[in-house]
Image (tube, rainbow, N blue to C red; front, side, top):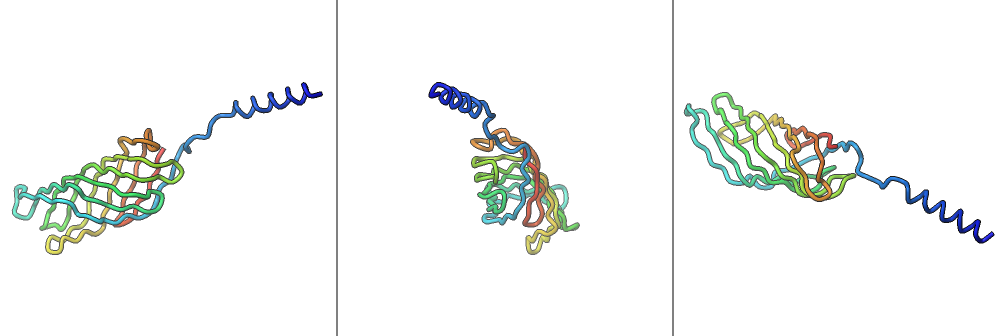
Length: 159
């Protein structure tokens, strides 16, 4: 009888060990808010018209809450048209923190954006951006996907 119980216990343990290990979900919906905490360094020069500027921004810092918890540093170029009151640009953003349901590490995405821009007050409104993940590290290695940005919100799918 002891041998039968031992055999059943060994067989049950083998079944449990054969189960696939838990892994990150296939798709992770991310959403929440972000806030700019440091506007970084700005360098601008006229771009063919006294009303149009080409600017480079480095060290632009945002704090994220929601599905993404942590901070990011962005470097980007943008064109500001003061006559039209618009700006658009592109760059790279590196997020360091955690992604709900996945873990912690860094994610880097290329971002492109456009918005209204007031050249007198430097106010941005109607911001619309899209980030496409290009790399990740630590628990976030191998993640891909995209994130849409509004004035102070984000929403996207990672996989």
